[in-house]
Amino acid sequence: MSKVQTSLRLEEETLVQAKEILKSLGMNFTEAVNIFASMVVQERGLPFDTTLHTYPAISEEEAREKVAKSLQEISPTSGKSAGEFFGELLES
Image (cartoon, rainbow, N blue to C red):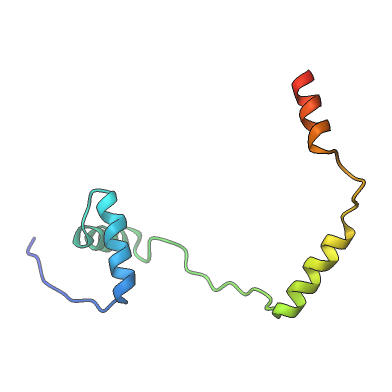
């Protein structure tokens, strides 16, 4: 099968990071792209799920309020101290 040359446009930092990761896996960027293309053919589509996830957006203020409320609900008398925990652990 003959080979063809193609070109891609990627964010520079993404390419640099991808090449570093692929190098640690023992392959180069071209080999990884060839594997990806082969998987697209084999799967007859993208070789991973593509879905749109909708997450409810909350403001930073709302997030801080939720954290503060959760912290208030923690009882200072619940649970064990580290000394009690490790004491019991060592007795076992």
